[in-house]
Amino acid sequence: MSFSAAAATGFVVLFLSVTVGKDEPAWSVKYDPSQICAFRGSTVTIKCSYKYPSIIDGRTTEVKNKIWFTKVNNRVPVDLMKDSDYKDRITYNFTESSSSSSFLTIKDLKQRDSAKYKFRFITNRPGGEFTGSPGVTLTVLDLRVQVRRSETQTELKCESSCDQIKPPSYVWFNKEEKMEKQTSSIVVSVRDGGRYSCSVKGHDDLRSPSVYAPESLSAKLMSSGQITEGRSVTLSCSSDANPAAEYTWRKKNNQSVVSKDQQFILSSILSSDSGQYYCTAQNQLGEKTSGLVSVKVTYAPRPPSVSVTPSGEIMEGSLVTLSCSSDANPAANYSWYKEGEEAPKASGQNFTITNILFKQRGNYYCEAQNSRGRCNSTVTVNVVAAPRNRVAAAAAVSAVLILILICLLVWLIRKPKVWKQQSRPGAGPVPSEQQRNRKSLFTATRSNLVQLGPRDTRRGRKKRRWSMSLLTVAEPGLMQEPSLNSRTVWRIQLPCTAKSTNQERTAEKLLLVSK
Image 1 (tube, one colour):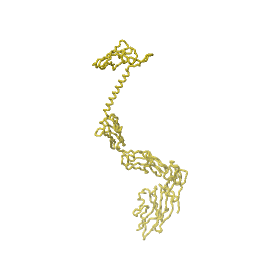
Image 2: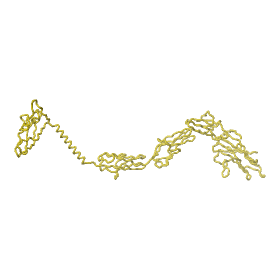
Image 3: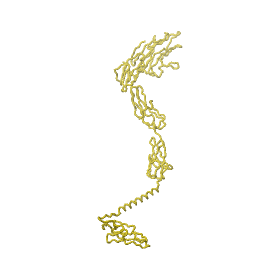
Image 4: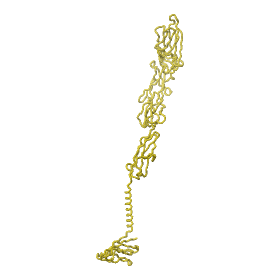
């Protein structure tokens, strides 16, 4: 067993020579080599030599058909020329000599071309068919970079499907630039934004696919039109990454993961699912976060919440406000109705009654409506009639008190001044006997004052009117003489009641008015 490398125009082939033939020299197929490793995209030629008896039973043997195959259908080999997987990519060549040969050429090798190829020929003799075994094993060289991630760094290792034949030497590239390292593995920093690939030394144009962190991340809502409750909604996340990225979905303002799939499916969406979502793509070389995707679920108004201010019993004449609110999308419009009446009382969330009447008591309901539906709730307004008799009584009492206060104020303003008698030096008190026996009730301070005469003691005279003209009047012994200039003449008539007795009676009332 020997390993050699052969290069031809347009293709590169690594092969291991193993000679396999049939024991009988009359019928045989030999493959040289029996194992071939070739680069993807290159051209490879597989060859063999075959033998058969030239004369059988006195008759010349002729080869009627020669094919190469990898598949068998109903125990019948499928000619590669008729296999759609190789269309326009293969050719056959044959030589006829003492040792016949066959050549199979495959262009633009693909990964699926890796298989075991066998040659079969058919002669003109009955039973004159022969297939060479075990065939040639073709391995299309698949260079790949294995990524192993640790906490702080990432190890990249270049591997190929031909490593079991002979481990080749590798070179590395980062963003199309050749790196100095020529080992099978390298260590790079996490999230450094690099794009790494490798190739077999001497074949820089045949590189492995690059490995890199997620790029071009996109998150989108797959559903179209309005989203209504109960619908199935799909959010999709995609990115360009190698190795393939893993995805997680989160809702904004909520750090918990809602899905770990590339597509986040809400099979029966609820109103509570409304919000903004974003996805994160991550592999061993880094991660990337998408923009926000808005999900707006439309739904009919929920039963409104209604309230009345003030609450409880409401006095007639009060200011009353009815309030209404409902959760809805789109936002609801509000109308107020009174039970038993068809026409709306008001529109809007608040309904205000500035001076409520007793007849306006009863049940009111608020109706919330949007394009998805409508809903209503009821509130009771309990109005209590105002006690009008109490109001009238209070008004009357207030009026009387005000009148009394006015009269008292006038009386205080017009009340005459009273001077107490000042005791003179050396003068004694007025005898009480003199006070009891005085004939006249008052003493004038000027000669032009009309005196009140003795009281009438005649029986049978019940009432008598007294008339007097006054300038200034003072009770003897109680007031000093004031100035005449301080008084104004008034005409005063006072009723006086006297009994039929010989005793003198004094007037019971005397009104002094000063201006």
